[in-house]
Length: 276
Image 1 (cartoon, rainbow, N blue to C red):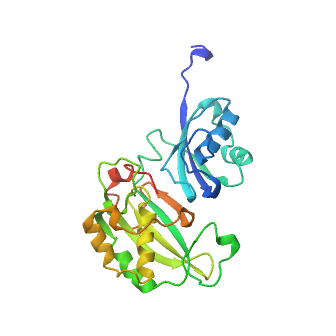
Image 2 (image 1 turned 90 degrees about the horizontal axis):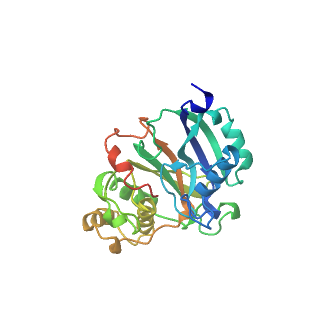
Image 3 (image 1 turned 45 degrees about the horizontal axis):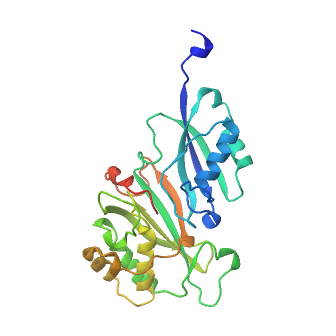
C-alpha cells in the first residue's frame, strides 16, 4: 500500500472552553456576527489549513458566559501531534480560552452524550451601589427575600412540564425536564448571591426564566407557591420576564459523572434543547 492510498485515521478531540459572553452574539456561528464558535473555528482552520467544524454541548445565547463549555472536533492523524491548547490560546481573542483538551473515543458527542448540565446565575443584592467590574456579570436587583426564594427553588425540583418557562425559538419534542438541584450560595463578592441549577436538560432560556420568577418572589410580588401555579398552567404568558443574560454562566457539562445529584436517567432529554 502506498502512502497516498493509506486510509486516513481520524481522531476526536474534546475541548473545554471558558468565555466572557459580553461581546459575543452567542455560541452558534452566524454570518457577519461575532460568535464563540466562529472565533474557535477560525483559530482551528488557521492551524490545520482547512475548515474544521466544531460541535458544542449547547448554544449559549448572546451575553451568556461559560466556565465549562464542551466541544468536540475530528482531526486527521497528521494533525494530532499539534499542542492544541497552547496553539489555540495563542490565536483566540482574550475573551475565550481553552481550559483543557483531550482525545476521546469516536462515539463521544459533546451534545448527544450529555447527561446533565450545571448553570449558575449571579444576582447583586446591595441596594446602594454595584462594583463597576461586576456589572457585566450580575443582575443588579437590590435586597431580596432570600428565604422566600429558597422555598420557591424547591418547587422546581423533579420532573415537570416547564412550558411556562420556555421562550420561543427552538422546536422540541417535549417541554418536560428534570431539575436535579436548585440552590443558593455566596457569590463572587459579599454583595451578591449565586443560584446554582443542575438538570438533565433545559429549554430555551429556561434558567433565566426561572430566575426571573424567583426574583419576583424575592421582591415580595408573589408567594413561593407561584412557582407551582406556573408549572400547572403551562403558559409562558403568565410567567415573569426573562432575567438578563449577563448573570448566567454555563458552569459544567456532565458525561456520566455522579456529583450533580440524581441518576443518569433522562439522558435523551438533555440534547433536545441545548439552549440556556
